[in-house]
Image 1 (cartoon, helix red, strand yellow):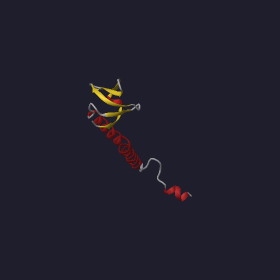
Image 2: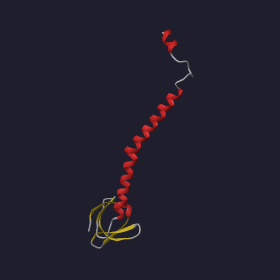
Image 3: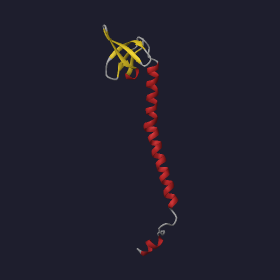
Image 4: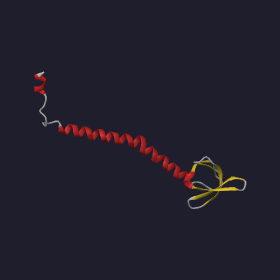
Length: 104
């Protein structure tokens, strides 16, 4: 046992920078995993949704995030007017559109 203790490096001698480098590499790997698994796909979905919102036109049938189907009657700056039923029109924010079902 004394032989093993004699071979061990004394506290404070060498090996300090190796631990720091491995810690930095580990944190960089964790950040890379978060970026490619969480952040990047979310940014891609956000860009696709913004493209869908920008390409909406009068006459498109849409599904809102609250589950209401309707046909776009009018588009204003950030608001769309949906025809939900005969003589029933509802105002929604453009961001409330979850999907464009059919194009006109």
